[in-house]
Length: 191
Image 1 (cartoon, one colour):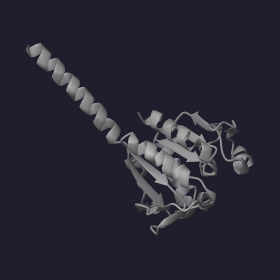
Image 2: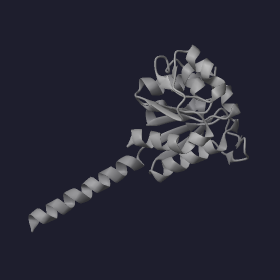
Image 3: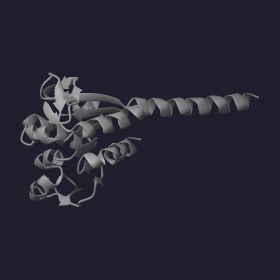
Image 4: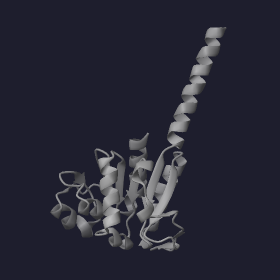
């Protein structure tokens, strides 16, 4: 009888710890202050939340950001206030507005720190260019929206042309049609 009680307790604790482990994951999603790509943000965010992850949204402004298709998002924090150590993943969202981060020293530092800390680092659409500019795609397989292929290759990335590319803990995606696969690839690395 006692043996059965201990086995049940062990199984319950194992289940609870697995549930808590996934709920405790924190994902930082970085969006442009204007003109982020709606589905590249909304689809992965929904996937992350469904997986039990805590999503924090950062931008260069705390004003309500507007997507290219009309979605609005109130960022939680400014990128200048990000403490990379507190997150399990850092995800840069694309859309034409993401260009504001190509040469932004704060955004580049976030990408570099996340990579050095062994965090999952993701970028979709034109946002892989941010990772390339940060120097973390050199020698790595990556994909990107067609307008930025030459730019990431010039920084040493190995462009594969896939919808989603995973190289170690770096996840890149080519655009809005890959948003679902992109979100799921990041969840898989975090589980």
